[in-house]
Amino acid sequence: MTTLQPVRGTRDFYPEEMRVRNWLFDIWRQTSLRFGFEEYDACVLESEDLYIRKAGDEITEQLYSFEDKGGRRIALRPEMTPSLARLILQRKNTLSFPLKWFTIPQCFRYERMTRGRKREHYQWNLDVVGQPDLTAEVEVISALLTSLEKTGLDASHVELRVNDRQILNGLLSNIGIPEDRHTEAMVVIDKREKLSPEVLDQLLRDVGLDNDQLDKLNAFFSAAEESFAEVGRHLGSHGAATEGLLRLLELLQGVGLRDYITIDCTVVRGLSYYTGTVFELRDRAGKFRSICGGGRYDSLLSAFGGESIPAIGFGFGDVVIQELLAELKLLPELTHDIDFAVLPFSEQQAPVALEVAQRLRGAGFRAGSDFSYRKLGRALQRASEIGARKAVLLLPEELERGELVVRDMAARTEVRVDKEAFLNDPE
Ligand code: HAM
Image (cartoon, rainbow, N blue to C red; front, side, top):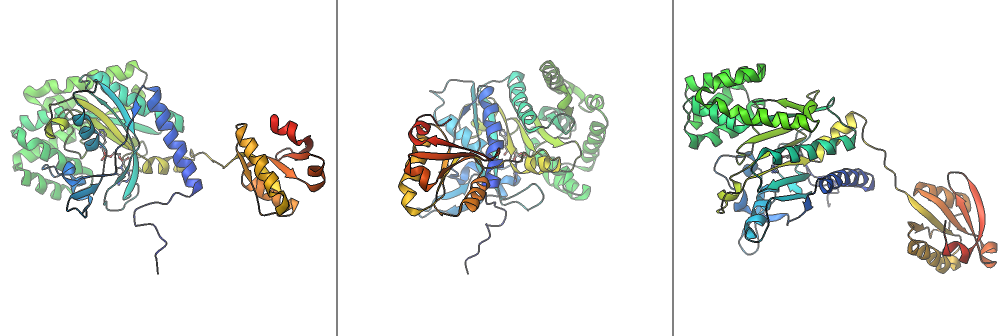
């Protein structure tokens, strides 16, 4: 028998779920537009090689990929950033930088299913490409935090943990790890919270760290958890790496967003292409997975064979945010609503009902009709179920006289109106 369940890890969106999704997407879209970003899109199918990276990114192992009938290796996109890079490289000679682009793509990852992680999710992406300085960081972070306020969240519920990978680069250099191993080491370090210390140490040994280097790395993280002031002491001659982060903090203070920000030098993010600022949005109670993650990726475009173009952005999934808003009782109760339900009571009235509904729509109203010809009481009940503000009753005697009965559903009042006069000016 055909299974009626959605594929494991994927979701169906019934109208009630769709209303919530649209509510959230509207907030994302309106925020993006308010910050001057333009929307783009690409196909969910991409060449698999777009996602093959040598640094051992987890995302590469989670690909939904297959061979198409022409023998090409194809993947469902697990994230949007490589597609964005591809689009930009294709037109780099005609595009005018900096670009401020956003999109809300559906992404697919064959994940181990845990709370907050599904095998398909939508992800608001907002990126600034071609702007090398920290003003780009401030713009994307401001857009992100502004969107939260529209959902009812504030700095008492969530924090943005910010770091700069250059600090970790500084540390790794200081303890003698060659630069060409840094990215691989960071992809492992990102798993600190998920793996036991023994497993983590072993993975780092595989990257080439010896016991002394492991001790220094662990000492750094203990210090970083204590306070940011301690971090500089572990960087030796690379101490200047902390300056960017401090400057960013100052700029964010200037736009009134300091309350959200926690400097956290243990934040790495799992994608190997990040080169500088990295950040993640977490709930303060620490119950949920990261709500949003992003960072600066100044060399992704050059990795695809283009010249290097600085870029920064984030991906904000639709799963964790909804879990958090539900827990905090901040999800809105959204109901379906229409302006008019047109109610005929016999088949002969169908043509008039169709005409009335069509003219109401023409006048700019949302109008539905109910052709089940129920008795008055049941028809009104149905009209209120579909969220009608008013019902237009086609009662036989009134209709004969060229009249309609318009009922205000909330006030439970009715008025008799001339059909033509009403349809020429419905309210
Ligand atoms: P990411 O950190 O892999 O970054 O994902 C960003 C966000 O997408 C996560 O914080 C989470 O909200 C959501 N997400 C990821 N995987 C899942 C999943 N399996 N189920 C539900 N939600 C998920 C990126 O994808 C980068 N491309 C973001 C970016 C854009 N960086 C710069 N520009």
